Length: 217
Image (cartoon, rainbow, N blue to C red; front, side, top):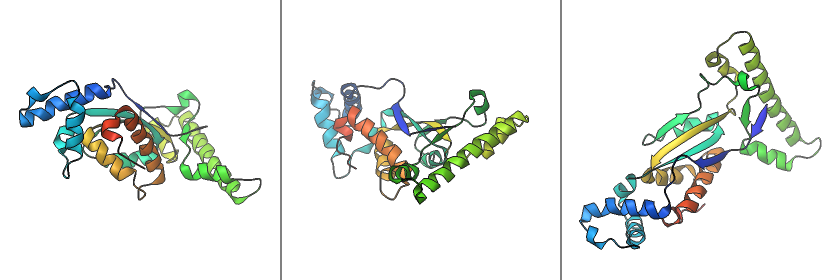
C-alpha cells in the first residue's frame, strides 16, 4: 500500500503565452476584420480588453484547448465528469491490474492530512488516522486475494476504496477552464476538489499570467 499526494501537470505540447495569445488574436480579429491592426505586442492588449468586458467575448477563448493531468482520488474524479464541455481520459480499473504492480496507490485526502498534522501520541486524531489506514490495507488485501482466486480486475475493483489513486486527463477550451476554476475553487466545493483545482489554477496562472493572473483564491 502506498499513499500519495494529489498533483497536476500539463500534458503534451504546452504553448507559450506569446504563441497562445497571438493565435487567439488571429481568431478574434476575424470578427472585426481588424487583422491590419496586428502588431508585435497587440495580442495582449486585445485579449485583455475582451476578457475584461462587462460581458466577456467568451467565444474567442473557446478557440484554444489545454490538457492537464490530475492525480487524484477516484471519488473526486467522479465530480470532474459533470463538466460536459470537456473531454476526459481516465485510468481504468477494468483494465489496470494492480496485482501486477504488487501494490495499490491511494490518495491522502485533506481531512487525513490535517489529522496527521495535529495528531499527538494516543490522541483521537491518531486513532482515526489508524482506522483510515487499516481500511486501505484491508482494501488492498481483499483485492489481491480476489485476484489470486482468479477474479477479474473489473470485478475485484469493487473492493477498493474511494481514496484509490486515479489519473485523469482533462481537456477543455480556455473558456471552460475559467468556468471550472470558478466552480471548483469555490468554498462550496469539496475540499479535495478545491485543492486539486487550485493546483491546476496555479499552473495556468504561471504559464498564462495575462489570462489567468487575475484569478485569486
